[in-house]
Amino acid sequence: MTIEQRMRELGIVLPAASEPAAKYANCVVANGLMFVSGKGPSRGPKGKLGIDYTAEEGYQFARLAGLEVLAVVKAELGSLDRIKRVVKVQGFVNASADFDEHHKVLNGFSDLMLDVFGEKQGLHARSVFGAVSVRVNLPIIVDSVFQVDEER
Image (cartoon, rainbow, N blue to C red; front, side):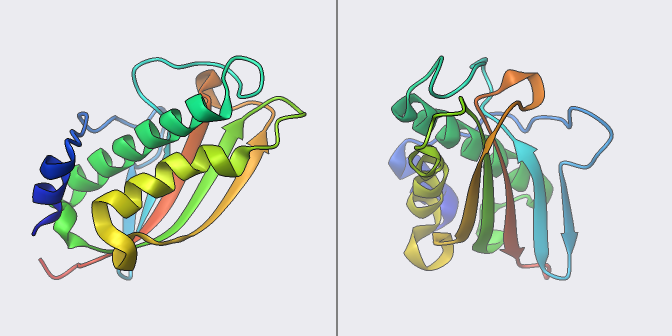
């Protein structure tokens, strides 16, 4: 089963790939690794976890950020089947000083990668950090690294 077929089976629909918000590339491929610039959830959520949103809501925002990342990857590679492995994920959670559930928020992204790519390809290393502020007051920004098939 292809990744696209698995996504259809799961009812996952990708948005259009977003454009960079400033002077940088959406992604760069070097030596078999694709480095994807930080992406947040599209369609409007703004605010801080622990003040405006709960960890459960943050989980959904992280999942939306994952859809943004996958849209950019697909636009660049033409097919998500060229992903060999999700390597590393870093989440930056826009949160209040006393919020301590960052890991639960980033699980939204991680669970999506596991759903789409399965355990072998989707399980990844990760880090998550609380941030005083992030670009345009998004609740989370995630950057990621994928191992890709450069042969196709």
